Length: 157
Image 1: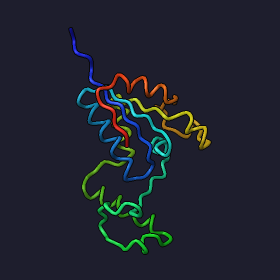
Image 2: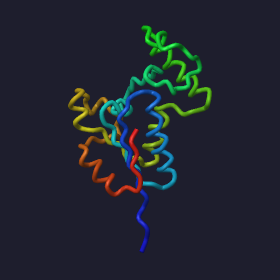
Image 3: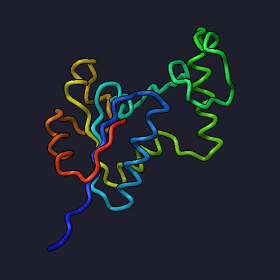
């Protein structure tokens, strides 16, 4: 009897620059290893599959985030610091040769990763299908659960 093809299901629920990387890196790696892979983008994670995502990051609320410049929390809360932290994070990623989010999304799609945006989230936040990447489909959580129930591995980011 032939073995079933390995499956990986991922839920991406965060829409910040630092949290955009884990689901895309895991999905692209799994696809390269032959896994049938799906990412279900829900809640703020839908931002990751928009045509033009507005991904930012901040160290506020995440004391474990290693930033190139350590600033006291009070300074991090000042106006404009989110843009500064986002710029610093992008520079760090680029200096380490990490692919951009756009490149990782394209790699996932080219590798056969199925990307699904949560219909309820789209409705809740008034996001139109045309705002999403062309290859992203929409479905409800029941669709994700059907795939996840048959998966060998399920991850949430």
